Length: 123
Image (cartoon, rainbow, N blue to C red; front, side, top):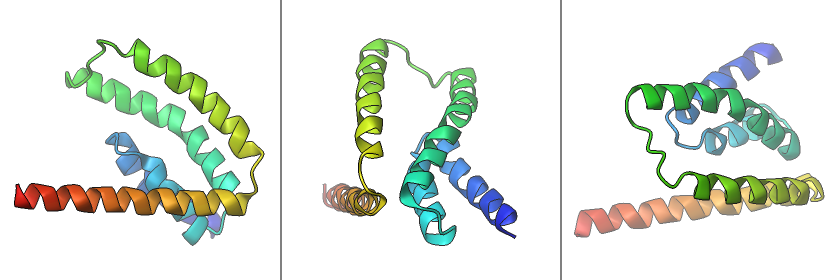
């Protein structure tokens, strides 16, 4: 039964990932809350799945003329460096602390989204 559950969770998380909307924001909570997966494992699975998903999404966006490459090197290089540092740091933290940090991140995202939507309505 768990195979089908994880397959379904992968499909659900893959949709926003393919749209470039941060599939991990959906996949990690799905794996931890619905799948009962430990936080570190969920984050690792998300990172592992990100590479093939991003290649498909990148090709699709490029084929549709939605890819701008000017200045991308200056975004990619620091992102690679800081992601390596972040991965080493996350590996040293307990799963429970990662889970709480992720919850704070999601709440912050929700608050920013709510604030921006209110600004758009009023302005």
